[in-house]
Length: 300
Image (cartoon, rainbow, N blue to C red; front, side, top):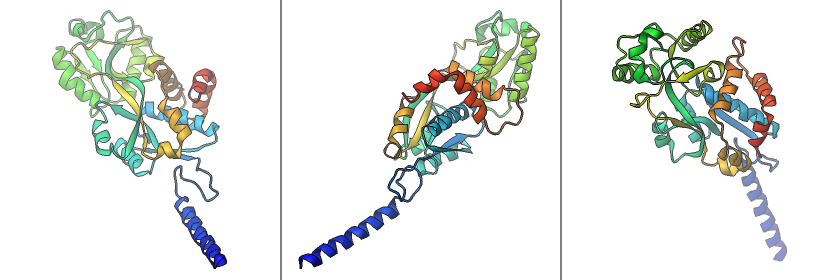
């Protein structure tokens, strides 16, 4: 009788072991069939958002140096939030609050975790050359001729363009200036041309952007708040991320990157002179080597 009970216990244990093995064979940070936690992490990266791409490359390399396997998967903001919420992506580094992505945070709030802000200086701006004779948008209309009566913008469909047309221009009486919209590269080319010639120039821009590291420029004050208040850039992760990757969760929860550091990294990535770059690993690695103390602080 005792032997029969022992055999029954062993059989039930074997069944339980098989069931546990089947449950632990999934993706993300779940345990593999060898009983060890997975080291595979997928980061969702927003298409066309350089600050998020820059931060994602930093963490890809840092985590790979720590023994993790990291993939960067690109998609628009909505699909990335959805992917983090359903486990398709483990995390993303470009959630803007309290305005830009507020709807996504509200929609997926119960299925994602906010690990906190890593940058608190994200905002839309009107920038001019650093030695321009004005410091505020309130002065621009009266000094428009010093800027050739031109305000250089970016893409016609951009949120910054809409804010400039609907709020900045009427509020500060800039209707007499020619507002030129075409593309971000065209705006940057005009900015560099004017600066190289020692001329005044006014452009629509935003923080964070590598132009602040590459050029001697300053933001015009916006006392009426026509471009909105500064936003924060947050890291988001799935609700199981803390359990699956406790070490990485701790590092990302403490992650901070001020604008000057971010400008420097973006400048290295996007203003390197190399065309059609699709993999920034070597560029980012070189930047990290030059900023090793800061990089080491990420995982202290």
